[in-house]
View 1 (tube, rainbow over the protein chains, first blue to last red):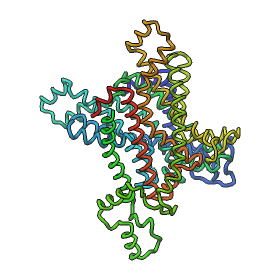
View 2 (cartoon, rainbow over the protein chains, first blue to last red; view 1 turned 90 degrees about the vertical axis):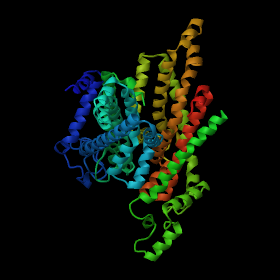
View 3 (cartoon, each protein chain N blue to C red; view 1 turned 180 degrees about the vertical axis):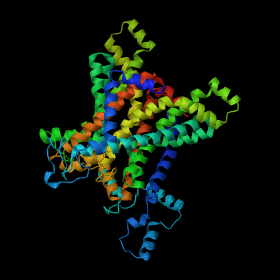
View 4 (cartoon, rainbow over the protein chains, first blue to last red; view 1 turned 45 degrees about the vertical axis):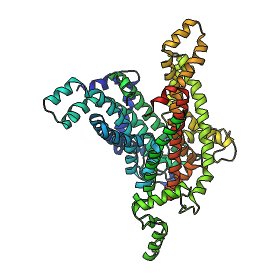
Length: 281
Length: 308
């Protein structure tokens, strides 16, 4: 339960409170999309194509007469699901690489950090496009692109934490008691270094949502008829003059989600008092 | 300074080789034989073998890479499969548009971003500071392509001030530059503000106050100059991001350019063009970092000695 205390503290602030509510609501929509959505996400009904928002279709319909509100609800599943799960993978890889580099130092450090700096120096969108060129468009390559695009940040952060913690007395004590390198790194050092990395991961999830939307918009992410927030807009560009709501609403939902993540993350940084640690690495 | 420049240039060689290997491998890591993308369905095995030999795919991978790199250095990027032109010609046609858009966006976001950041720092914690930073924060949380589409809807469709798309005249550049620039402004303003607040806490500022220099002069002549170092660093690092932004924005505004070419080619699986575009963008990112390092070293002699 101790891990929950900073979350609750952040949720009690003026910034964090509303943001936490919005995020919970979005997650709720993502989980219960099939129950909440008034229509299936792929139910076409051509006579009611490009309809303005009204009582039946709260956010209007797209070029195939599909209900936009339902598609955005299902889109929460895909967009949030891909962003959160691939960011989790990215944090995991970053922590392992940064942990090994920081703990062992020497050539291990130099090799691992050279690889991670290579991805660090190029914009995520370029890395994503290279990976999609190799794997081909789809949700899977979007997830890989997010994982590869962001891990360097977490590797650097973890490495800085590990180097700072390595000299602590309790690590020396553990080593003298006969703990192995693996035990020291994974049982003692990494758990103590995790807090700033997890917060950085949470903040980066907002960027991941935007990257997913961009790739989806280009037709390189979720493939039709799957409705990710970006993919919904992709089919809307041709209709932008007739049915601007197909572009408007998904973008607003993305903005609300990303702003909430940033505000709650910011409140969390203050609650944990780790603003200085996040600048390391 | 010259030796610093030389050392810094040498450091780029391994990065460039790494980049070139990754981009070379694209065509080989794609599922299926690279030649299958060129062959028509139902071609004979003999024709396939002939094509394999023609493109050099029957050679060992390392030899292929050597040949590819050799041609690359001479500016030969191969031929586009679908567009049926040399890739270098396609890039030469599109690059000026991207450069114009990118540099206009860079200048726009630097000038406005530094001004806003400096004003916010001078009025720290005031309502103005908070409001400005709040708006900027909100502006950087929407996807830039969406911002572009909204600009089209408002300023091109509703108000009719600017053309919807294309690159015929300077008016067509206003909305794309604004769209890319807004993200850049947010970044530059935030860094300028923090750097100025940091600089304002230093001892020399206290001394300037003690000497009776006016607040305005301290901020504009001393603190701002001091704070430019992190801003220049950031700008160099973000040249790539601005180009990345240009990739998406060109596509939204249907402007010619490397980004539009790249996205179209990715969707058509025209791999030689994809390779060429990615290589150009990668080189641009590398040069941006280099430029930032050199400007930084020119501004601060301490950095010249510190390079590893």
